[in-house]
Length: 157
Image (cartoon, rainbow, N blue to C red):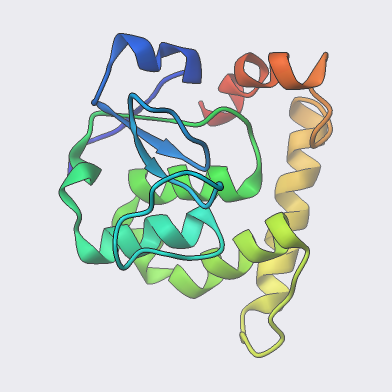
């Protein structure tokens, strides 16, 4: 699989058809997203973008060979999806943990039947804590919506 370079969302226009878009939607890239209206590859349907990415990795879809990856905001589901395409072997090995983390982070839902639910919850709390300490609180970007695309870029580096 091609090594990925994270680019800011607004740079998609400079790399049409070369970008994986995780947990977002843009017509010039290939979406792996649970967002309404984003096309999902057949057999990859799921409630979170992280799980969609993991299913795409397991299926080995050819679009995963794109050079760039991005999204338009920082949240744990998007972060885990991007991490998964950059670390596919580790992601597949930790599939159940990553799916549980994405569910907890995006929907505040815990699957108590998953033996890793406590670890997933702890890791989500840690990621939220680190985000608030190093950058700004979750969903607290200055001038929120418009600035989030730009403000989230350092979080991926």
